[in-house]
Length: 300
Image (cartoon, rainbow, N blue to C red; front, side, top):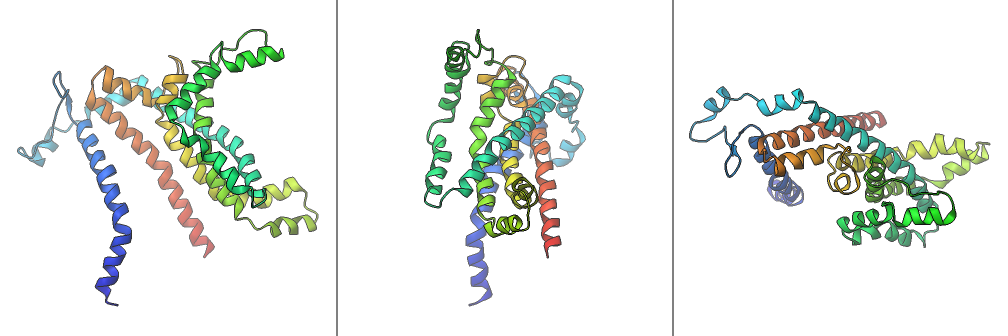
């Protein structure tokens, strides 16, 4: 087989993902980047492009001022929105991990015949619209909702709890919505652990909790990291959940971006918010990839 034929076949395998990234990620990203460097204007569309092929790149570089980005760092609203989004995403990811790990562990230790059924139950919520599932939580968490009626019926509370339109409701919505994204990679890592390792630890006198922290949890760390990234990254830019379940004091960058784009019609500033958010999310991904590369090199 000739080398040219091999290279063509290799391109058929790796080419489609690269074309997909080019069309649906890089091209939109450069469009948003161009918008972020434009000037706001009262027009349709509401911006004045700074870069033009007719004037050339040199004129573009001479008038480049990054005013939209400097405005983001000078206004405390956007800084607080970024910090609040990172805080909510971090706490939500931690809560999701605490809920998902026992579920994934139970799935991995369940009989083989039951595991496909348990897997189907985990992904079953995806068969329903995401928006409908969030609206369902409104009916559950509102003062006259199912949760308060149930707790009052049991005599646990005497008056309805104010959960709706709070940050607590946002945490509940994020944990519920992204729970499958945490369970699936955890299950994949836990299911691969050889049971003979735990049996050997038990034979050597190791207690169950010690065996878990010294054997099970370290071996499941790849699934923990993958699940945390799958939850944390989309949670930072979440818009629907804080908009429907959160209150006016729930500040997240997704809501701020929507307000700038649709209410204020400041497309350049909204694009700058989106670009900066992307760079904020790229940092943990790059760090994770470097850590994985070092781990692979150490394993060799």
